[in-house]
Amino acid sequence: MTSYLSETALLAALVVTCICVVAMYMRLRRLDRHQAEYERTFARTSDALDATRIELARFRQDGRDLTVALEERIAEAQALLNALDQRVGERDTRPLHRQAN
Image: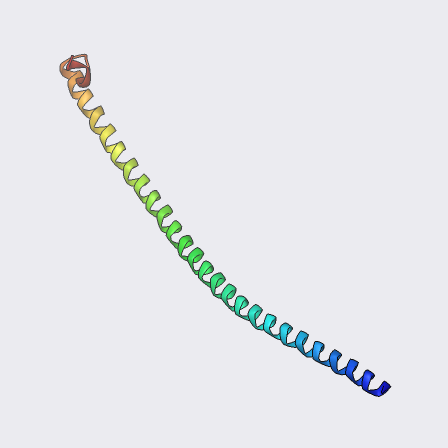
């Protein structure tokens, strides 16, 4: 009778252990799925950041190009204004942009 009780206790412990192992196995499978999803998400995030970095570099270069072009146009406009003021100054002592009044 004592052996039946000990065998029943061991069998119960074995069943509980099996249930715990199966539960742990299910959790590990779920963790693997989540890990794969996280890896895909991180890969997409990394790709997006790389694309953003490239576009930011292009934007920066376009800004530099625009600044240089505007600087050249402003210099041309300033030279033209100076030439006009000089021509008007030869005719009249007042600058052209002030004669309109």
